[in-house]
Amino acid sequence: MTDTEFDILDELYFVSSFSDLVAKTRLAPAEVERNLRSLLEQDLIRSFWPDPDTELAYEESSFGAIVRDSYFLASKEGLLQHNTR
Image (cartoon, rainbow, N blue to C red; front, top):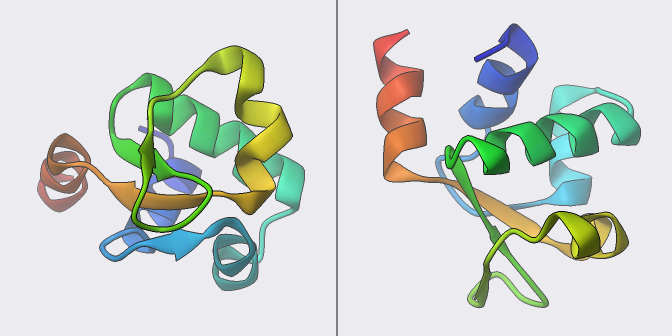
């Protein structure tokens, strides 16, 4: 896990929208998107769309089209890795 991924996970103990992550991390939207994709591929976070209650399985082909309207939450594995670092 990179330092940036760690910082994003730090914000995902509760469900957060993409725009909240950009504001809280002060990263460029493209950088947040790239790191969210990496965290999803590692199963360290979960994604939700179109609302914060509907989990959506990560699909590489559609992620770019919906990422900025999605919500995210650390997975159990993500929390464990975040807390043991």
